[in-house]
Image 1 (cartoon, helix red, strand yellow):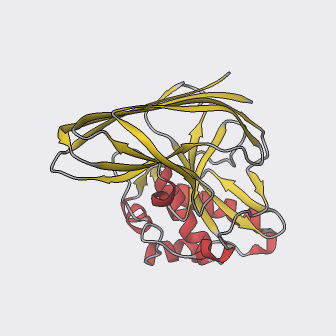
Image 2 (cartoon, rainbow, N blue to C red):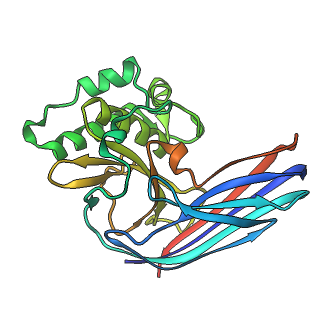
Length: 267
């Protein structure tokens, strides 16, 4: 399936910013099952200082704000061909060792509730995939999808305690449980073409687990499916913070507001 994507992020600041530097992870790459036909960024209020591939094989651009800027606009647009591989990404690639993906992070660190959820998972007698889909179902039952209860800094254990959250929370809890059971697991962020709308106000998140004999496999807990041809992978990491579309810092006392507009449609 060929998908066309438009992603615009508009930052406004309450006073001029003397210096700011952002990391932009908003460029999908051609990988197994995914071919990027074209992709470009248009930036107003700043400029690209450098580009590089990080340790997770994400393409990163460093963007500096223009001195004294009161607004920054990042507009990304492109087309991607995606193949339905039932979530299977395949062999692990890159320099980062697989064992690193068993490492806990502040956002995925298990507490009593997460340990209880992992302990209730079935054994692997029916196969790893069946076991992992069962865990995904448990996570979906434990956290009702409902925006407004959590934010980008919410930890997996806190999301379980609230019992409400979004795709990021589902992914973090699932990743934490998978790691407790010995699986390498990582966070994946990107785009999803929805069946009932084109306009969206945020990207999408899911999890990937490395299964012996298969490789990396995706699990979208929120939608009870493994990613298919409607999904575009952009960035991966140990958790959201390593795969965030935008992160960075700025000097000064200005506060910011952000307006995001995303369109994903079949071309």
